[in-house]
Length: 232
Image (tube, one colour):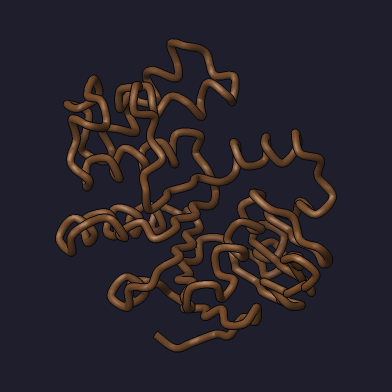
């Protein structure tokens, strides 16, 4: 891929600032951040609590908007999108994996994986086939009919990964994906995400865990709203 194509298809933040107001005071969760992440990269985003790393991920994922600056994902400027357009962007482009799994407790594993496909307007027949394929990919096809409370923590996170890849995203944002898992189950989830990255998906993992960060190609530390490239 040519360098120019990489820039067009990747993630680029230019002078991104996100300001919050608490009472009468303002603070910058992000302060004039410049960042470029080529397509297919695997980046660990680290930093202490309150450093701005979740704000950075939320802005890249279209869950939040910058106060100023530009956010380009696959050449699309998220800063100018309306809420409905951002929702469509998230559904088609970003797969989310959260520490707390964020599964619907009254829905089966299959139904949870089908949710983003429903929002994308996929036909009932196709979304069932695709959801089963995703569950099979994470080794849980035989648990398709189970509710979340019938699954272990590691299995629930694998369902979350299956849901994240259902719409064939170009980017996966994983926020502390191993935070609620023991080390063995956490390693399984990271290996699964790493394999998705090997298949070409850009992977951004927010983590406090140094062992998780070691799997990444790059480590970016967020501290006091500033971004620093760190060695692994």
